[in-house]
Amino acid sequence: MSRFDKILLVGLVIGLGVLGCLGVGFWAMGPRAMPSRAGTPPVLASPTGTAIPTEISPTPTGRATPTKISPTPTDEPTSSPVPAEAIIAFTCQIGDIYQICVMKADGSGRIPLTDGELTSFYPSISPDGKAIVFSSMRTGDFEIYEMGIDGSNLRQLTSEIGNLYAPEISPDREKIVFANDTDGNQSIWVMDRDGGNPRLLFGSEENDLDPTWSPDGGLIAFASSQSGERHLYIMNADGSDLRQVTDLSNMGGRSSFSPDGQNLTFYAGPKGDHNIFTINIDGTDLQQLTQGGDNLGPCWSRDREWIAFTSYRNQDNEIYIIHPDGTGLTRLTVNVGDDWQPRWGEK
Image (spheres, rainbow, N blue to C red):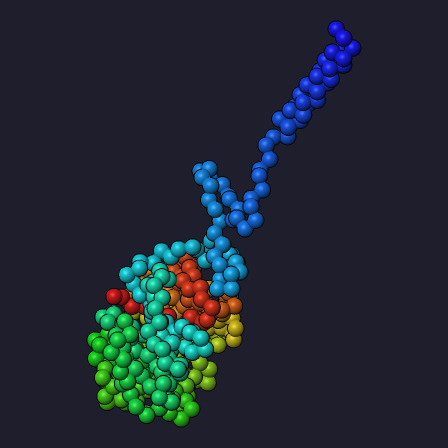
């Protein structure tokens, strides 16, 4: 073998050895993931092994919309257990104006029904689920209006008898009870369904506000400051037999009867820290349902399973529901503006 052949053979052996070492090194390190191209969403593996691309929704400016943090399971479940056939009317903020909205009771299908340039609020749904009455200052004073559950057939029911709030149609659909501010203090009034024959039902010369009918139409509950501090009262539908229900400090305004008429739900507490309560109509068995969050304006569902209310627990007024035993807290709305004053209905 020539000297040149020997040199070539030694070089070949050394080369094969180096390649073998490199192969062992790569095998020990394992394969590396190839980096994705710029602008390509990363790919995540699902529990089943299927590749799921993450979605980044562009805004009109072309910037990526940040993903919202999911609520904790104990505070804001991702879906509502409420039947979708039930509906909720509520006050919604659209731009800088409060309007009337409706949604399914599972939080879906939010639809604004009014579009005036001045405040509309205090909606409630008729017992047959076909109409909504509410208060609006579209004429300068707060008057009572009625419209179909879809926003059709809007009509003004009252004219220049005061500033009128919290209207509610009676269970027999013949009358409307409401609060009337005529001299700086509200009192409880009633009128015919078409707005005729408006008349004073109860007035204490202090604030009497937020009336609501019992399911059989025999009683009216309302909040009043007639004793100096605000409390919850009930009276017969003709204004007789007044009796005090609550004896709490910092009583709120809006309340609601349970479907069997034996209980009331209401809110109370210091400013910025209201909570939702239930109580028997004779003043016994007081129960606190919420703890913190500044909760307002509760209303019982017609199947007795839920109480809807407004809460500021996420630094924005949103609508929540909770069982009457304090379990099942569920957030229904996630909107930029305020959603408040929920009232149940059925289609």
